[in-house]
Length: 316
Image 1 (cartoon, rainbow, N blue to C red):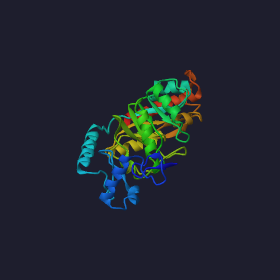
Image 2 (tube, rainbow, N blue to C red):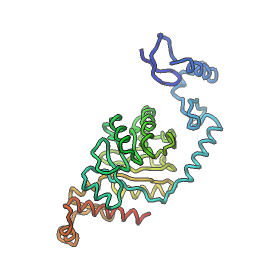
Image 3 (tube, rainbow, N blue to C red):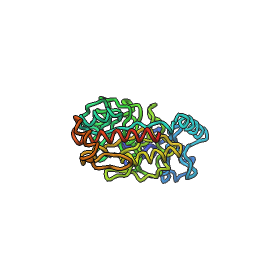
Image 4 (cartoon, rainbow, N blue to C red):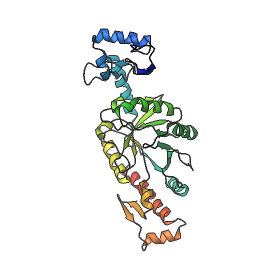
C-alpha cells in the first residue's frame, strides 16, 4: 500500500499498517522534532518549510521566518547581496521572436531579434530561447528538444498551484544540464521567496507572464523586485512599459519574447509608436513594398521588427 512519509513527504510502500515513516532516518529525525516541539508534532507538518540556506526542513517560530538559523540567514543575505551587485538594470534585454515560418524567423534574425521556439516544434535556426506548452506540457519531448538544441535560456513547468513546487524544481534540475539560464514562471502569490537563485550553478530567472487572452499571471509585480526577469508574451508597448517599471525598482529584465507582431502582420498591420497601424497601400510605404521581394505579411512583419528594435534602442 502506497503512503506518504510523515517527515520527508516522499511516497513509499508500507510494510505494515501502522508504518508512518519511509526509513529509520526519517523516524529518528521525527523523534527529534517531537522532542523539540512536543507530542503534537504531526499536525505541524503542514507548516514545515525548506530552509533556502541549508535546504533542510525546519519549523518556523514566526510567520515571517524564512531560514532555520542565523547562520543560514546570513548565508542567504550574502548570496542575495552578491546577486544584486551583478544585476545591470540598464542593460538592453534580449528581444526574442517565437515563430515557426522559416522566412518570418529569418527576417526576425536579420533585424536583430533572437530566435525562439515553443517545443516540440520545427526549428530552422539555433534557438536562443525555448518554451514549453504550458497548457499541455510533455516533459520527455521538451527535455529531448533541450538536449538537442542546448539553448541559452529555457522555461520549465509553470508553477500554477502551491503543491507543484517540487515538480517545477524537478524540471529545473533536469533541464539545468542543457541550458545556461532557467526560467521559472510563478503564478502563485506569495511563493517567490521559495525559488532559489541558482539550480546546479545555473542562474534562475523569474518569468513574468504578461496577462493576455492566451496566458497571464496574477502575482503582483512587487514580488518580482530584485530578481532577474524574463517577460513572456504581450505587446512591445507593454514589454517596454514593464521594463521601465522594473528598472525604476532596481530590477533587471534580461529578455522578452513574443509573436504578437507576426499575428498582426497576418492582418496587414505593423507596430509603430506604441500601436498597430494598417498598411497604407497608397503612400510611400506601398512604393517600398512594391520594390521589395517580400510578401505583404513579410513586409509588415519586417517593419514591425525594425520599429520594435528602434524603440528598445531609444528607451535604453
